[in-house]
Length: 195
Figure 1 (cartoon, rainbow, N blue to C red):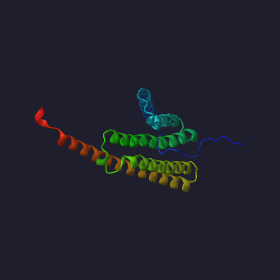
Figure 2 (figure 1 turned 90 degrees about the vertical axis):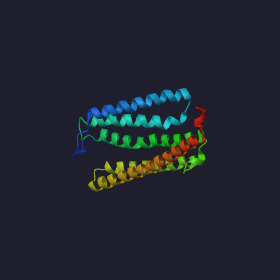
Figure 3 (figure 1 turned 135 degrees about the horizontal axis):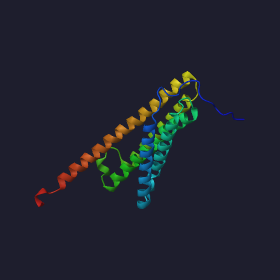
Figure 4 (figure 1 turned 180 degrees about the vertical axis):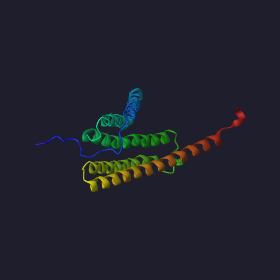
């Protein structure tokens, strides 16, 4: 028989979550998801489904954070916001990674990328899944209530976020390289005397 959990006997946050900020981010993610849902329907771009799920998860996570403002010792909203805000970010970034590969192929610029578009999506999605699993394990450990588990869980979550940030930095470098090479190719092939 499951017994409902009560409030924690300690503060789950080292601060009081802002209701205003929570509602602002909820509205921003919900609006972004709604806009992308409309565009996805018009253009039949089903590859944006992970992005929509990410927006929905972030919006729900920030709703839970606004609920945490009322009582920072309630475990339910704390766990919901912790899991959803962390778990939704890889869905957003996976869509961005897939989009770069599609843009590179659409522009016939495969040879200009330092990382093949065929591998870009695969590598980054694997990294996202690994960081997602890492962050979820760390979040679960943080909710244990054991001080050693909370500390280790926090370290694991930060490591997962670090891996995700490192992958995103390499992605940005790849994007900048492709952009510069395309711009140079365009400038070299454009005849300014015909203007």
